[in-house]
Length: 154
Image 1: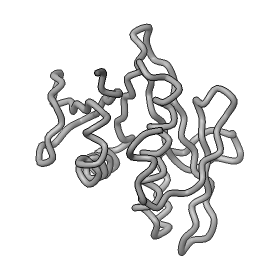
Image 2 (image 1 turned 90 degrees about the horizontal axis):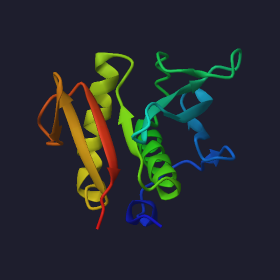
Image 3 (image 1 turned 180 degrees about the vertical axis):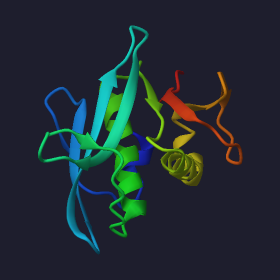
Image 4 (image 1 turned 135 degrees about the vertical axis):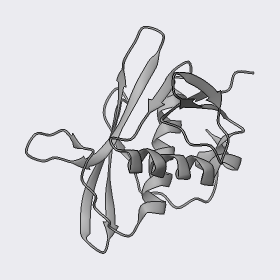
């Protein structure tokens, strides 16, 4: 089990699909109960998976990654997404996870989340940020367009 998952960081309980590629949880906040979804999709043969995250679209069964729910629980939601990343990587230890927001402000929000938990997660993850067409080791005060991460190898 990941050190991150064993820490006392408040998270929602995750439900996962059979192959541990999709996860759901219920956000509880000022706007009520909102079902959130996390999906890992293989994007190339080198083991890179795209992380998609957003509210569940009950009409399509998919993910709406453009809606802004503002349910007042963003810290707990972010911690839950990070928990899903570790759960996924526990089952797919050689995988890289690619994440980019659907908008500039979402990508910025992801960056702030990575920076907030960096001290806890950097012991177990290699994290890189993309600037233009180049990947750089993640640094807290740089602006990135996307991120990749994988478990550190011993």
